[in-house]
Image 1 (cartoon, one colour):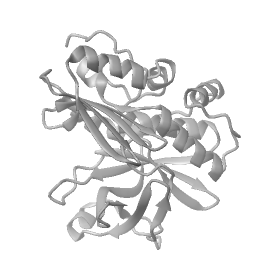
Image 2 (cartoon, rainbow, N blue to C red; image 1 turned 60 degrees about the vertical axis):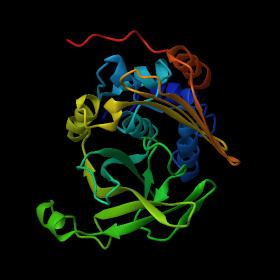
Image 3 (spheres, rainbow, N blue to C red; image 1 turned 180 degrees about the horizontal axis):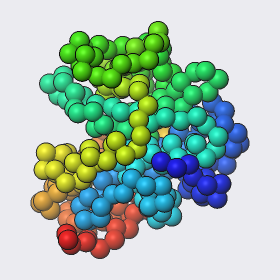
Image 4 (cartoon, one colour; image 1 turned 180 degrees about the vertical axis):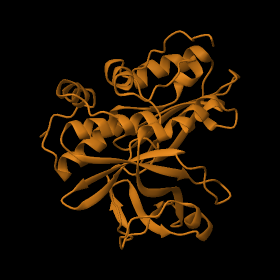
Length: 287
């Protein structure tokens, strides 16, 4: 995707409430990453409003910055990459395969993440996974990386069948595939997704973006979701896509997790507006 223009970069930084230095340093990257997570929700509501998601710079800028909405990984991380490129960072899009409950991985391009390279060190930025790391992770480093909200690590991964079918990885001491893992409360490690280090183009993600908007097999067509990180935890609104009476408010803090079943659609929309600042457009009819 094309880099944001200088005026778009300024509007994006205002959208996320970032007032620090615009210089492309690690500190700036870390602060922008956190500011984005605390202000821009992860949400899939356009899918349930019948609004097609377009992976292009200006429509995404209009939605997330001008309309003050959120999005899912294909939108949030591609806009982050465009903003960072507009600020002078070296960025690449990377493909992720989301981990399944049975230990297998989803298809390629199931998740979009961002590689940022600074002074020869590659960093993994990701504002589109939901409840995950809040600061970029060092790529190519298998050591545990501790953050205020948890501990993470990247574990090299190899599968002979997949490796044989894949494009050759350039000669490098670093493996091509890495499992991105998060430590759980019981001190076990959960794999979030499998990261492929080969740089990708945005159009390569379009088929999976379309799948997640349209397929009944996708979680995003079955569940309305809006979630936002807070300084001490996370707030989340969910609703079943079929409009049944299962509207839920979830709040996690340092003291624990609380859930509340909402009365109806009206209370759901009130919380969507009050907690996330989102006013949904009228539902569009399919063509």
